[in-house]
Length: 174
Image (cartoon, rainbow, N blue to C red; front, side, top):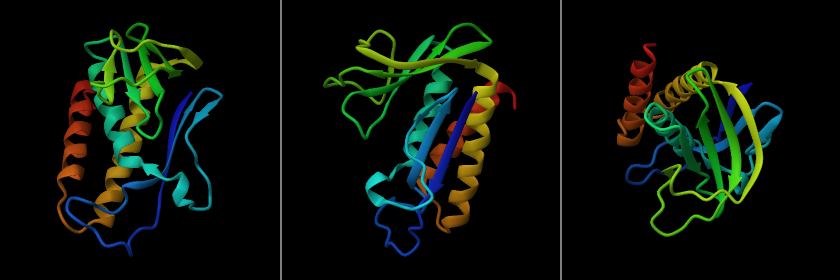
């Protein structure tokens, strides 16, 4: 089983600067089998808030790269050592794992298999690749709709997320 949950924090009273937008931050959680990664609470606690936007964007980008590569790592940008590993086993199945490995200078948020040295694997669950992609697309569409309803002005980041999602949908012929 694979599921994504998010909760946008109420930030409509905040003043936006530059390319900021409403709905960027809140709770973000991955559920993979019996394991959960990330926080999801009823109460909003700013200290536990993460960028929902960047999680969605990086997962879409990583999933697009799975077409060419068998292993892709997505950095949890909030932590110094945690990566989420997306590993394609075949055309039907994949594993998602939480691993611990140093983030060295020059690493990007999304890395391929050759650059990451896995130190510790906390969990690795095999899931259906198609179900993973459908859940990612479904939740990303929902999140984009939330962003468009919260933001009256055009925003380059929101438009980029929409373009990436369209690429993924085209790749999957959805």
